[in-house]
Length: 68
Image 1 (tube, rainbow, N blue to C red):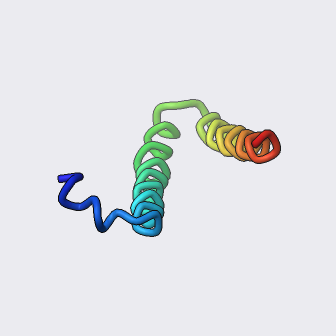
Image 2: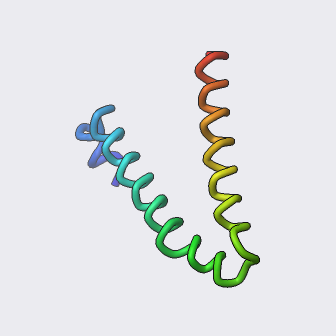
Image 3: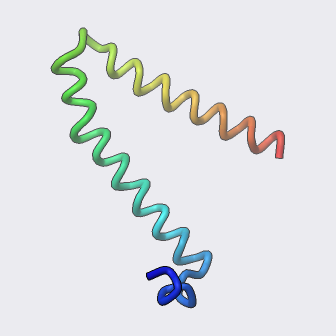
């Protein structure tokens, strides 16, 4: 399949595809995983974990931008 679609997979198309996949992953995590973890977990621990994960990703992106 890759060799057939290779001429159409420009950097712009790849960016759109990656953005769509990222959107699906965010939707699944917020719509399915977060409510389930809140139902089985204690209080706001799952929400704290979500915020901590976002903070770690933001800091790591900033560090990669500074280093590279």
